[in-house]
Length: 428
Image 1 (tube, rainbow, N blue to C red):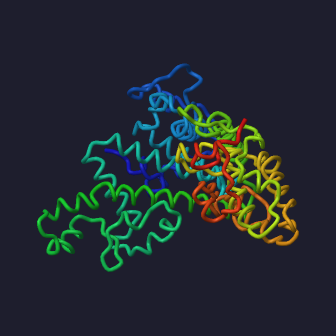
Image 2: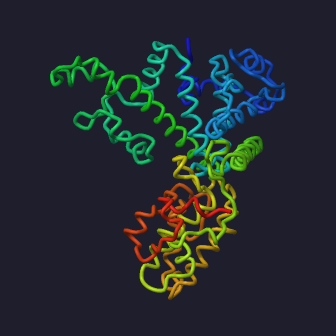
Image 3: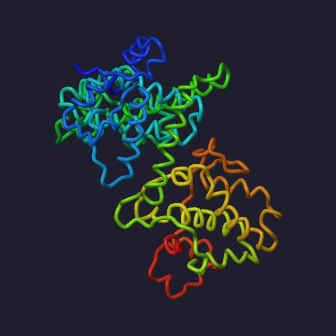
């Protein structure tokens, strides 16, 4: 029988597995049972022995590797990581999950890029593990986990944090008097008499069924993972220095993400048709951008610099294929140490602001905070990774929006008629 802890490691069963670990130093020791499960997993492809996780720490890194490669590499081969979906590995996997959460919480905190990737990877791993089950096993697992993480008749406010984080959307749920309806019998009791021309049980399957219950369950566990990371972070700040093993694991997680950014981050790696980021060529800027770069001599300085130029320069330099790929990213996904932001992007924007009449930040210094917010680092005076995600990285205006909101900037040349957004025209 499938362990629910294989899907939800924060379950009581998962916590018991952690308690049984014993000596923490064991996480570094080679484990023959783990290596045997990996090599004997069905459909597992192993190119060489160095790929096999030998201990809990190795397995933790493989969890993150799987996610970032699957997300970004068009030629990704899932069979190389098939062991992650073998239920026999669940005890090792649970320990690895907790190691990841504690490492990220202790060193980076819950607002970090590392935390976000870990939370997203847990959600995706749950999806794939459920997808490996038969329909009856899948329904049983989802119902068991839901019963443990969600109240029997939850008010929609129970999901307030999930809704505010956009991990879950209100229109994806069925409500009755403020209560979220998930259970089939509950749905039939409340709505059968109101449904005409359709079988109520068929309506339940269409509107809720396994799909919505899985969504709620997965998003709730993701939220609980984030909360656990946050608790670890708060505890590590109040109490003793974290175990060096956890700090070393945290560094390895960061290395995986930095390498991913180098390999795939500039517009998605090997995806066909992507425009890769490179140094900006000001001569390739469209007329509207050149006008702003020369400095705004009249009204509209704020919108031109903050709303228009800041998103334009940041996306053109870091992620010019944002509209063709339609994949949301954060600045640190591409510039993990903010070297490009501080060394290239900010000087261009500050230079344009200085050339305004009067200079924008001299006249309105509070707009520096708005600039940082448009890059996704919250309402602060400087970009800091610990604040990333407090606001959204604002995307560039389309040509139509420029014409509507900043018409004085729009002086089209012969190239403008070929584009709908100026962002991809700026690299060398």
